[in-house]
Length: 275
Image 1 (tube, rainbow, N blue to C red):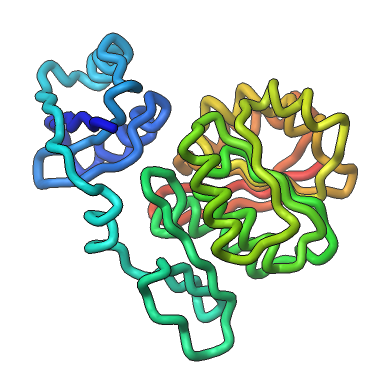
Image 2: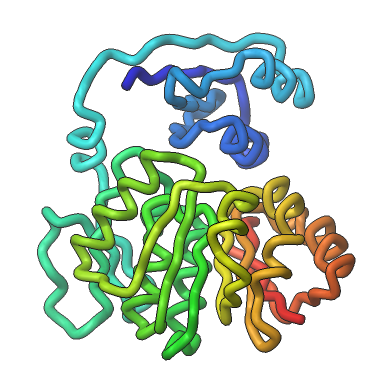
């Protein structure tokens, strides 16, 4: 798998906006420098036309791209990945990290090239909500599951059944590996988008729906979330900025869904919503 590095003249303020835009185009990792954002994407996903449209939108007239040398990227990740603690309730770590001594929820994740380690603010926000709320006996749906981390936390919090799906084959395989590594027996994952999953789902309802994706996909797929949500259920939406809340709230209202709570971390947002 070859990866492309794109060097983008930017600033700390603009970086957050660009990252949100680039994730829609398939970029999945970033490095922020003083006046430059380095963005990385699988060569097969690089769309220069769409990329230039984004750059023009923000007044970026030049950028550089290069093919990264072939190396073991999982090995590179291992050198830099540190365990994440969510308060004192959960430790998210890799298999090469020592097991925490105190009695906490212990989650093993090997993210490889998938999104979702707990380091990102949006993953952290939803993970924290799951740890603080009751999952006992509930059916949980993880939309755009990435590494499967959120579904795995729900499962370890005694959810009755957890389903996840993602449009990325690598993410689905990675989630399966993480399910096995955490000895999870009540979670399944599918390769599908929302429309394809809707056909598989056969009108099943969920008490908790997790969607940590991007603003545009969330707005586009709210119709499906409403269809899948049980009457007393909750939807957790994240993957967008605080400034995007009003646009999402407007779309939720169209489907008779109301925001019951919002959570902010470093300008990233999470919405808790229900009927």
